[in-house]
Length: 288
Image (tube, rainbow, N blue to C red; front, side, top):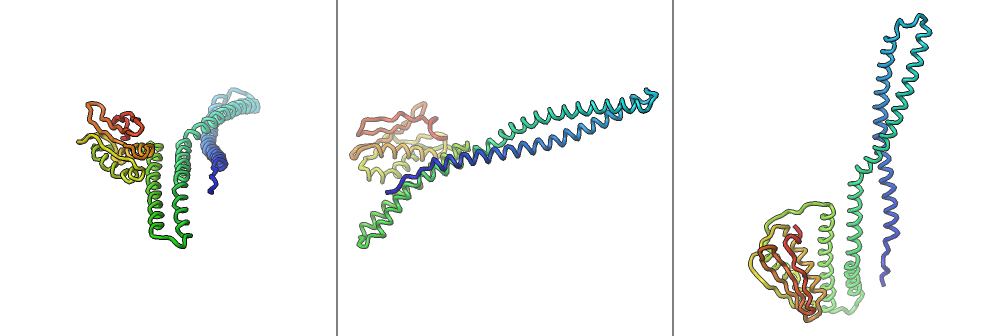
């Protein structure tokens, strides 16, 4: 029996490592920004100090009979001025360092979100694909170990493996759609006929319905045109239909009804075996 894989310790470790990584990157970015500001501020302060010293020299020139006294006054004034400039620079640099740290966090936020999206995608993919891969592996191992396998055994193993491969393909499409939606990428909009999509969806779900012993029915016909993304509309409707089939007992009926109302265009599915009926889906509620 396969032991369930526990990813929580690894997830916690990854989260801690990512926190340290982004904190270090944030400190480096803030430090570089602060260093550049320090160089600019000190350079400007030195120019300001030299300008003040020259102006002071010209201002007090001739005001003192004793040259030594004049130099003492100039030295004391310049020392006090330099201390004031350095104190102002220190306060400015401290404020700038805090602001640089805050802005570095905001700058790295989109990068962190992208990393989180990638990590979530990988986690979803590994979790969702683990089961069908295990089924395919088990089917092939059993077939390979059977020394008296018949054509029926081979056909059964191949059929089951093919079903799991189809399932993995569907999961991959769903995961890619999830990643796309999390990244906020817009879908291409076009005029789509839902009637054509229903034909393709019913054809795709027909094998599953036969395997489950469920009868598929379609009610309503004629073009019903909406604005949206064809691939996402087909994927969403197919997921709804498969979910209805999975939850319908053998001998039951799943019916898809498409009707063009003034507003909105509605798509409904009903389960005849349980008398449950899904709420109508408006065109505005479907992926676009």
